[in-house]
Length: 564
Image 1: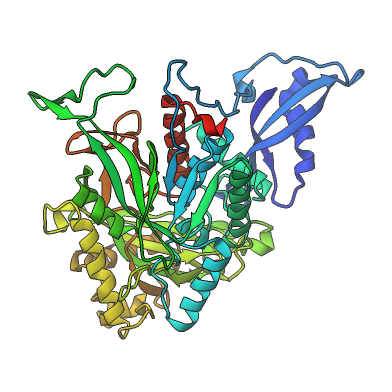
Image 2: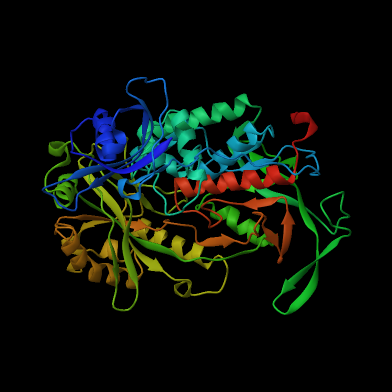
């Protein structure tokens, strides 16, 4: 199969024209041939010239003789035609080492967001029958809790916009863009389509699903995991891990005693060997805790599991401060964004609602940027702790609300935390979420204002919900953004505080095998991954990191004999 790039269609022109366009681009090489099979692998919009907007495609295809369509033909590769052999995009399953020990217990996964979900799916497919523990509820019960919160202000701190089946991504735009380059990305997209996602996510330059379709997708993946012997328990919060130290090795690869050497700067010291042997959970209304034995646990807890961060730190799990960002959600009419980007409304041109991505470097070096832009979406309150307000953007698949919104963020450095404590970033976030709650009238009604009011220092509720440096940076950046995207700094643009959870405020230590550490030494069987661990920044990167964690387990252990 071949891949060809830069095949151009006009907006409204049918994709059925692509085979004809490919043959035309092939020129003399395509004479006497027909396109026997083809599929779009990438579609992007080129709107640099608003008078001549183009849809640009990359297509995989095969050719055959026009005289005998059953006879395959070959092409000579010519760079000028943008032609190449289509790369193999199939997922390569991890392979267990031949001398690997057999697990005595099934692996445990903590959290059922994108990282936990894909770790679970890969392990289930490989025969490991994982046990997945999710503090929130299944997506249907969770949706009811979230809608009740938005309507009445009654917050369920265990099942909300942040916690529950599908993770925070379930109540979002469902964007599948990512800055990482990893072959597992295609695997994630294929699985989402198989679970009910739209097929165009396989080739759209900026794919998205939408929270309405995501609710169906996550249920489908859950049911597949269960059909393969996996188990998902909702309403189960992990409250502790059981660690065994200074043990004698039981045939585990290459160790001969109860300690290991580790280089710490110029010093080489002996560290006790530690390994996971179980987790302790609190389930529903049960008064007693439950001990679940295991030798491998994937912690895919998400960026909002602050109580879990705290007890893991107290337990001695190694983690470090990590910078993040803080700011507001900003809203504009979607038609304004369309006209700024396309020159006309998206509906008129037959194009999807337009998006944007803006950044600015302040005079003092602070960065201000837009993030998680939701065309045709809405701003929602996404709180998960009592007396704290945090906002996010959400949209349905059709992106039909008529309003565009985005996070407008300023970078927060670890030096801003005011403390060297590893969880100082958590406390920084909590401080401003509490202020937003207070400034919203001691309620979950997020403080709002217009840009005109904010610019003129007439929006105390919003401004006092932000660090002073962030408010100043936003004021400096807005006129620049207005020049880059016409209308962005219009006076009636709505700003809502506070957007504080763009990423995790901590990063867990882990080595090349995805294994975390305790007191500077490897903690065998402990696999921190995803957004909460500080190694991802969205649905796709979190899902990929979850796959990596599953692969690490597959390489290290064979499934338990009970799983065979």
